[in-house]
Amino acid sequence: MLIIKIVPGENIERALKRYRNKVRNTQQLKRIRDNQEFTKKSEERRESLKKAIHRKEYLKKNEE
Image (cartoon, rainbow, N blue to C red; front, top):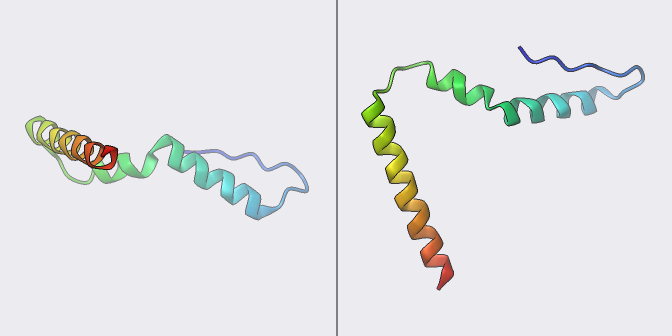
C-alpha cells in the first residue's frame, strides 16, 4: 500500500500527482496485472527475447 503524506495547506491535485508518480515508479499496476494469470518461465523468456529483437531492429532502423 502506498502512503502519501499531505502537507497542511497542500493542494489535493498536487498530492494526487505525487500519488500517480509513485504508482508509476513502483510499477504497482504491472505487478497486479502480472499476478492475474500465470505465465510459464519459458513464455516470459520468449516474450523478453521478442522485445529485445524488436528494440534492436527499431534502433538500427532509426540509426540510418
